[in-house]
Amino acid sequence: MRRTLTGSLFWFVLFYLSLTVLAAETTEIEAALAAIGNGSAEEIKTRLCIDRITVFDDQARAQAIAALPAVLREHRMTQGKLLRRIEPILHQVLQLHGRTRALQQPELFLFAHELPTAQIWRGSVLLVSTSLAETLYDGELAGIFAHELSHAYFEDEMAAAQRTRDERAMRTVELKCDGLAIISLRLLGYKPTSYLSSLQRLQLLTKRLGRSSGILQSHPELAVRAQFSERLIKALD
Ligand SMILES: [Zn+2]
Image (cartoon, rainbow, N blue to C red; front, side, top):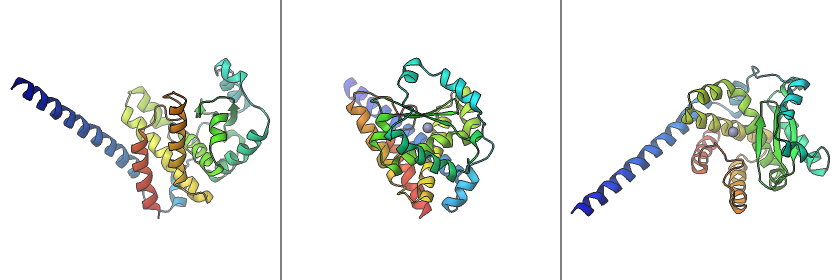
């Protein structure tokens, strides 16, 4: 009898917990979709790609690079075919976001590493590993770049969420950056669905390397990002 009761209680708690997780994820998706709002891809881009972003001069970029771990600086690739291939893709996304002034543009920092990763560092340096750049097609790379660049538009929101350790608010910002990535792909003439497929391939590659971090670190679960992407793409059609 006791065993049955304990068993039932276990399943009840598990059921309750899964409901709670599901509810939290749904709220994040709803919050991100509401923040993105309605309208065409062009209208949404104009509304969200704000001009009030932190500006960075050469000194700020140099300081940010100097603050990077030495191992990254030692593996920086400052020339070569891969860098020549990805530079114009970043330029394309910057132009689309209206970030035409040098002060609004982060410095591209390609470094040799087997883990596929991309991250905006101190707002002014875009870190990209060779593994990520080699793995992704041009359109997929544009999506990842757009996500990272979009963090600039939600800087205050992210800082507030980090201060209060509000993980749900942080994940909502990540979804909004995903949203802008999808919108950017649509406006650049790439397939918006390629954004999610690129995340899936990156996750697979990361797992194959036996690592759990990388591009997906501190981001919502892939299933949540997939659900969000599907709903946004449907709303744009
Ligand atoms: Zn992000």
